[in-house]
Length: 313
Image (tube, rainbow, N blue to C red; front, side, top):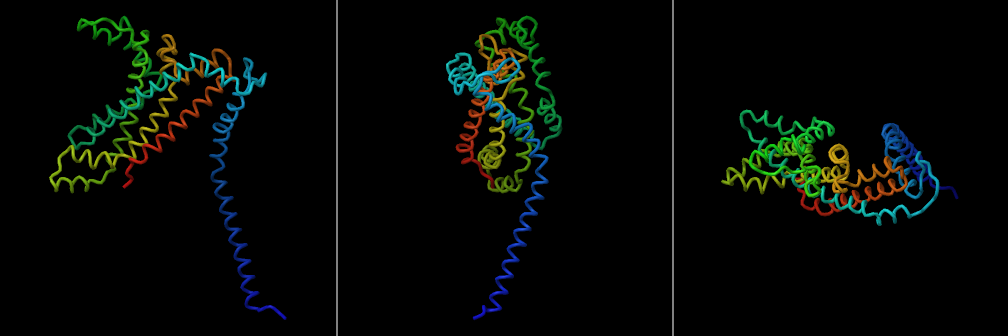
């Protein structure tokens, strides 16, 4: 008994349709991979390979050239968490993040709200507030190095003019980390200010007009319209600022070299000193892995806690 010709034709048609569909998907996949290939190549060379190489080195002892010598397993990690200098660098890093991120965001938000007002000459102030974005870390650090100078620095001259005692801004353990934090806040304000100002200018003006019709005051609009509508930008700025604070290195190296008494030694500077001063690339790699995990955990916590308060509409 022969099969139904119509059914056989339908099956043939469906089979050919599936083949054409699979062929189209494969062509789209190949085209997509060709477009992504330059990015994949760059990420492989400058991100993935260094990351896996760092993890590999963290399980070995190395010579002065960075070549592996002895497999030690988790010994680098165990020694790291019994090293008081590294433990202090972790404490300093969290203090540094606390000293720099909230003030940077709050000051930048305040300046952005001021610069968002439609006033004559406000463009000049926007330029002044954002000017630090164009200054390199090295140049800014040298500038503050002169300000913090204990004998001829402007800050101590100002204190002496009012009868105060000179302060060892970078040599006194009680002031060193705070001084570096002030420098970092000043350097980061320009970028944070521009991002927040852009977020403010993207808020629909009709929301403010409707609130004004209802007789709402300035601070009510700030609390009920500006901050909620700016929350996605604030979330981005806080997350990026926190990650950057964990990765701070340049101003530490120029201003204090981790001193005095390791009071300004952050994790990144500890990694640098372990690798390029002590030539212990294995333990430095272990510290780098720990730093990566810390940033990852803090970022995940930030997303879990912060994203709940973000209003995207």
